[in-house]
Image (cartoon, rainbow, N blue to C red; front, side):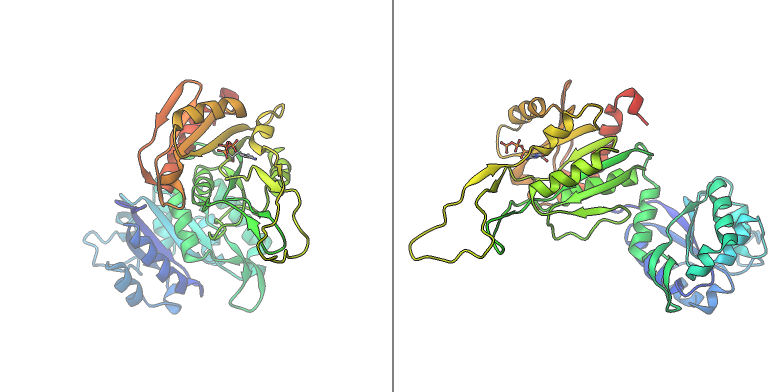
Length: 401
Ligand code: CTP
């Protein structure tokens, strides 16, 4: 799935050691089908050569306002015409100050002023003291009020040996932000709690009962909801997936832990999307020490029911708008509509378990009080984006974006 097919961006590099990461960002962005015109400030060329950026982008690199390779000598105008975005990465303290104050003393700052409606995204990269300095924070506030989109910065170890806020986002995080930028913001400002993955119920300290949920669908929905502008909290059972970027991820193991985490988080939520494959029972006589094998005998496990998290949230007075999931092996339509009514949720998303488990593609069917709507078989992230649009379209008027 080429996420940035038919898009062209102007990639501006300013002076910072994070320039080396931008070479990788360019490559990974090209994998998604984007065309990139690179513009570098003089300071950026001290950190990475124009030759590197030209070889990677496969296009001429622009350094100078007086570039006579451009027929009308107006690179500062031509480059952004028809471009889908300008991405300045890394964006130095000095460059943010220039942008905030409308200075135009080199090609990149000039084209940022002459850009017209072309969106401008900046990825700050600097030492933590520079980032926290009131002058930088003032400039950042000005840029935001001018409609500039900030990508990061992140916290962590810095090239100078200090630790704090001001690191540029990693190349793949930058790419995810760029892809998200182009998604419609149908859930802007909404607070959404998503559960994902399996739960795991202890038999003893080393043995568990679990199910085959991979977590892929729930993680894709959390990402799609964030792309749509929501503040997302993900509550996840044990999966092999990396925590998704840009949202808190609360790790739980058992259904009862998931229940506690959900009840804490949904108090402030507008929407609850229950994708997790929650175990219906836990082992009531779980052992605190490892069970030892006894010849010819199997342990007698006793089960007790787990709370039905979705049904409980759906029954909360003034609770969030709820979306349930059902993976069924047969009679999808019958089971799904019955389950929707039993759980008391306005929308229940069904799929066939034999197609969904651990797969990268899925075919969702949406069940609500009007009937059903089938989405095509497609990659889970695409399906998640369609579902997010369907949720936005179904929100009651007061909740609608
Ligand atoms: N769910 C939940 N808590 C549970 C069981 C399920 O919140 N203890 C949620 C799931 O996250 C999903 C929906 O309820 O959104 C349906 O889950 P499913 O396991 O299909 O339904 P069950 O009620 O467990 O019915 P059954 O297992 O008999 O199909």
